[in-house]
Length: 459
Image (cartoon, rainbow, N blue to C red; front, side, top):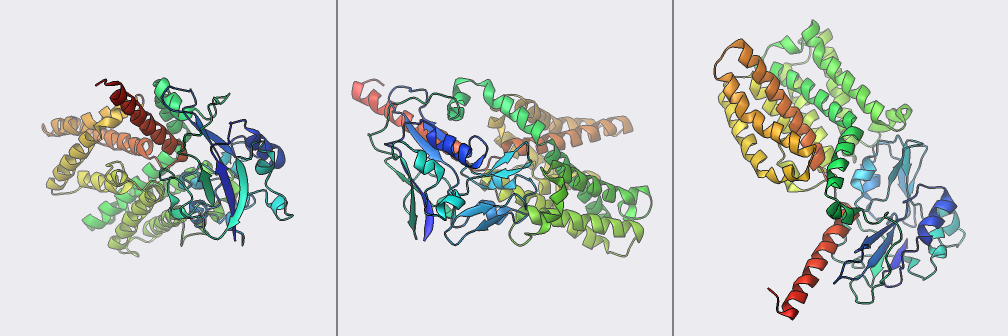
């Protein structure tokens, strides 16, 4: 029998007692049990409805399968337990979970999440959040099958969350307005247009190490692929030029370790190679570094074609980390992905030039298709225009064929690649319950508004 939660939307008044009880009982971060709201500002036509949710203890939890450090285990009762002593603080589970359950504690550098008050439930006592709920809106349950117990808008039910929601679509919705701003993030984005832009800037500042890591890996991979295609170990042999791929991969690994909340546990990053895309990425970067080292110390020992193949597989592994979390087809067409960026960079240095022209035309089409991303404000608008304008300007600069304009063209070309890589991070958007609530609220509001117009005879 799997344990899980039952939430009755008709009974919840957003008093936050469940969230407070979770914090007091377990000493976890505020928001470990989150309170979300539709229409928290009490706009007309749509009633207020609240949702209290923590970890849904899924039967096939994405957080556990994606964790490179094997910091999650699943108990016989279906409870997903996070082990802080195993966590290295990479935060990948926060991307993988569509329910915003794992949260990184900036003070300790590791993940915290609901564990169903395991010490209480083993003694037959309900979780603290359940016992604290004054209206009975939140309850615990045990059943073998939770399928079909969630509304259609609930995201990513394929991982089988142990959660039941009742009365989320009925007219018996409470008309209470939440007293704080914790649950209003999705609505604030529309009421305050600058909010999303500032969040993008914060996101880039926070994830600079991830961007730098991928850029360094791509650069090393490009050098090794060029050597493989040319058949000359100029960039993968002895001397300083042969050392560059090794230096780049070494710097990339150092940056990735610095990104961790607990760098001392970085050795755990490769423990889940079979299931975790992040583990496979780290393993491939380590392999790339090892191949670069051997190629530098003993040029020719490893065939150049093999080193080039490993380099290509490494940049693919980088992309799969993001594709596993954000499965939208549009992200796979993004020209800022590592694989496409690496191939495009290779065409800049190789002959025939027709390959560079073909790739540039493809990039131009795909960038134009992403024009809507420029509407999100700064810094995305600036990055988008750098990416878009760099394409024609590069062609104008390489046309004269003199060394000075070629140098400017090279600088502008790689500036465009870096801008596109930054745009990839900003466009990366794994499914999240907050976005689902926003979309659901907007849809329901528009439906009700259209109905009112029809009833009143307005066009």
